[in-house]
Image (tube, rainbow, N blue to C red; front, top):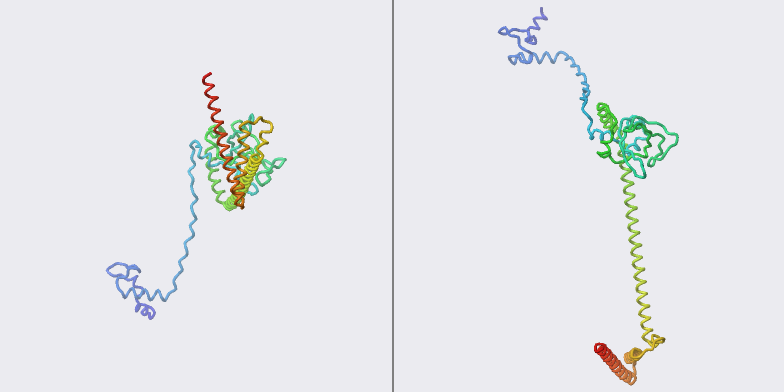
Length: 328
């Protein structure tokens, strides 16, 4: 009784009390006295831990399988170039990723290289390894084309995408569901092996930069060789001009050698006086003696007058010969 009387002194059971025949919720008590009593009782009693909610698992994505005819863009989506084959060649993903893809291969018919699209149906080991880029391949692709199945080496693959006319000649029946499933599988494979392709891209860029550097060095060597060749030819031309000047100088000093096997005439006389005029002018220009310089100047004047008279006589003779020819 004492305990119950003591309990009645506290109002922690007010949520059981009726007031106007209504039961109040613990979160919506009508007055402050009840709310304080409830807070005091909560502080006295242990609070049960609320269990954490179970982690919700992500729902699996539901794919809607399309059953319509395949488009060229979807066929291009499952196409693999040779460089991607090289990246996956030595990895466990090769045998899982490559089958079910489309490749572009080349063949030589009548001396002409042609390309065609083929569907990979399997991988087979070959007895003789062959070189594939910087690697050695021991497997070949079993492909299906419009003309049947064949074994195809990966060194015959192309890095270029199949052309529309090549896809139009591709008459292999394919299941649209399988092709679209393979397309999603390739996307996952590229995402999983992204590091391999990043390393391959870095290596490709490094090789490209190396080739560009070698090309620049080769260009510089060619330019240097062209400059040296241009300089050499210019020196040869200068040497030819110098020798020609020396030859002219010798011919002017030894004028009689030009008329050694010729009858000469007035041309011989004019050449003789020109050589004399040149000699007299050189003496007058270089001599330090006044008498010698005056004498050379005088002789040069006489030689110049003689040359002028010979040239005038030659012109008159040519005019007379021209008049006689017209009269005849």
